[in-house]
Image 1 (spheres, rainbow, N blue to C red):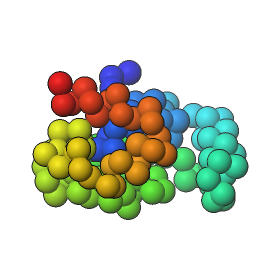
Image 2: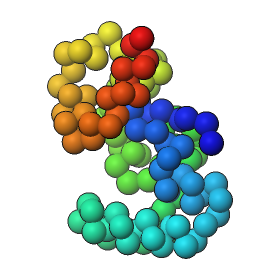
Image 3: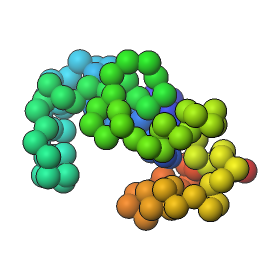
Image 4: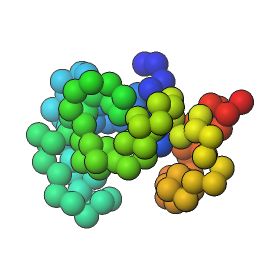
Length: 112
């Protein structure tokens, strides 16, 4: 599967909600709903586990539908936060990287 880097640096190609939608995999939906319910303290149902990816048209799941980083990237017309002129000083992306440090490498690739 090709890399689908979201504005925040997450790779949507690796997201189980997108994979479950693409593969129409109800077992993966149920497993992801259970895992995310425990991890995020929000009751997910398997019916909620469907997402086309941050930049793809169609359904978005949970926070991705309301993401401020996504809205900002769309408004600025950048490929992702790493491509933004404000990247180095942006408090929002710094806070997200602190929560999900694995995204930094994806964002830094855009700066190279």
